[in-house]
Amino acid sequence: MAHRLKASNRPAGRKYAGTVGIFLFLTVLGIFMAFPIYLTVVTSVKPVEELFIFPPKLYTLRPTTDNFSDMFAALRENRVPFSRYVFNSVFITVSVTVLQCVSVSMAAFVLAKCQFPGSKAINALIVTALLYQSNVIYIMQYIVLSRLHLINDPAALILPSVASPMGLFLMRQSMLRMPDSVIDAAKVDGAGLFRICRQIVIPNQKPALMTLMIFAFGSAWNIQSGSLIFDEQYKTLPTAVMQAASSGMARAGIAMAAAVFLLIPPVIVFIFAQRYVIETMAHSGIKE
Amino acid sequence: MKKSSGRSSSVLWKDIKKNAACYGMLAPFMILFLIFTVVPVVMSLPIGFTDFDMVNKPRFVGFSNYRALFFSDKIFLRSIRTTMIFAFFTGPLSYILCFLLAWLINELPPFFRTLFTLIFYIPSFAGVYTVWQLIFSGDMNGYLNSFLMDTGIITSPIQWLTDGRYVLWVTIAVQLWISLGAGFLALRAGFQNIDRSQYEAAAIEGLNSRWQELVYITIPSMKPQLLFAAVMQIVSSFTAGTVAQNLVGLPSTDYQADTMMSHAYDYGWLRYEMGYASAICMIIFLMMFICNKIIGRLLSADDL
Image 1 (cartoon, rainbow over the protein chains, first blue to last red):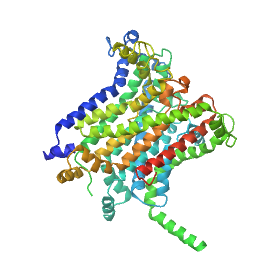
Image 2: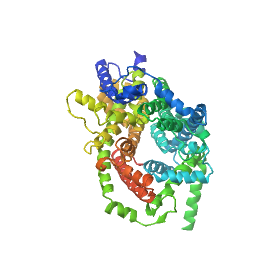
Image 3: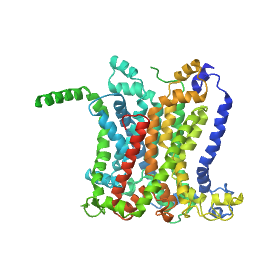
Image 4: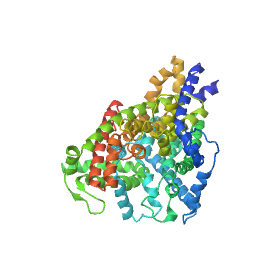
């Protein structure tokens, strides 16, 4: 009983009827939310002739991998092997995710828990940067990158994505709730700021850190090379897949296949991160 | 005067030296943030006062872009209205939905928490506009039309994506569908981080219903995440435009679903009038800034 109490964060004596009600409500809403995704997956395995059946079917009579093989066939026409795009995207995604999680966690910790000259101004600057969305920024970023001689360099896709104001705001907000007494106690014990951050704050901030990781991974995985890269060998997987999906035999099925294919890695990372958070956090929680 | 400023600057210097470790930990983030975010933002600020086609050098034109926007651009004035309607329906509704769902999910056993979080979160990064075109397709082959005709609610297909009466509402519906993103996940993480002993203490005190727990323990300890979600919601509802562009086209029928951001996109990337587009973005920024201040006041946060 005591074990269940902790693991489900719910006081003793709570009725199960309420939980069942919540479950049913979420299931109904979930079906509605998942329907377009389901339809995407179904359409990606539908043969062409079934796309025009009336009335439209919510399932397929003869599932086929034609759309996927057509997409891969279009990809094979490129001068660069498919594995090269995969490598580029994996390299960029892993770099951005790791660099972002490390630099953002450290900065968020000092901005949330230390008072020093300039800390208030930096906090305000970050929220303002979050609000300022302009389509001219990309042009200016391009100018900055070209001044740094980074055009056509994979670093041009990595570096601008590392210092995410949204990630920092997320981590800082989450760290604000950490009791100061825990940090002060560690200071009294002689621990440096970096050690406090790594050994006390971060282990307590796993849910927020995993959320940051999900965001960082998701957005880095979708990075398109755009005008920053012109060498085919440095282009990313989404760039190549989107090209393949829209070139030549453009049809709904292939676009769906591309979307489904690109969706798989972020979903796997998401499930891994969520399971990890739920399992590690069920028994912890720093007390003041 | 000179003396006192000299002393205070030396105090400041000592303060900075004392906090050297803080600056050291801040440095990796701040260096990249300054180079790739702050510098481009500062460079883009004056563009709204120029005539800039991305080929020739920007030419200073004073306030003429802003004058044109408010006095002769009827489509822009219309887009302000659309943006307001859009933000009014997607912002608060999606914010409440984010919180409500994050809370309800947290009441379930672990396996279902992961499952439901995934189901509600996938739409925000899936980018599947093609499927919505199939659903809202204007012929009898569209899933929605076919369903409504089967059940006898309508007798002839509705042009969801081209009829001026529906395009804005279709866009709002799809925007709501993809809106359980950053704010939602941050709130989910916040729920997972609440100190369990508070609930146990509350149970002993006699606080027992989910509702009481929510009001007396959960909401007060979630304030930072609630603020984060609010800011993200403001940003996404005021800068929405991609959904409409992908779904109902740009311009949409009678400009019904054209938001300020899509107007800026139109001028910037389709007509290469970056100065004008930049001025529009500046107005969007000011609107969000004011909205943010108000929300900050409401949630009594002093750093917004």
